[in-house]
Image (cartoon, rainbow, N blue to C red; front, side, top):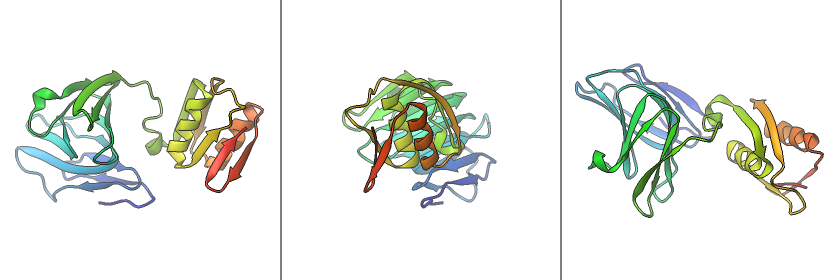
Length: 208
């Protein structure tokens, strides 16, 4: 299954569900084997895996493997040379190299695993991003978030180049929830709320 500019939802042969972000690809067999369930991902996807004690569910991504029995988690694997991020919503996940599970990290709900292709290291941190599923849910949540981080999140979510001019205090805080709004609405509300303005220069949106 390969997505273009739109997202899609897939049900796997074992009943597991996968939400694929835009510009992503998921490969899987028409039927899983008796001992394992293996799929391959390029891009980003959220997995809700059906629990089975006898068959491990494995997601193959470049450089790494993510193995579970039954849980829900998000994988961001944007390319060979970029960081891979696994964020666990429920259950436990093993995030490790293809040939040696002992060299990876064990993740539980509320944690993120990060793999850096440059130093080939796996690390584990608490998930402090409430918007890691925003691409799937369409909901953006900010709670006393700095304007700089708000713009970064909006830019990533809508795939738009949104930046702040030097005259704007990047540390100003915003508390807001936006549910499936268009980027134009979000920028309008943001600038009105903080008494700011914006202009569009080619592909760029500049807030001042």
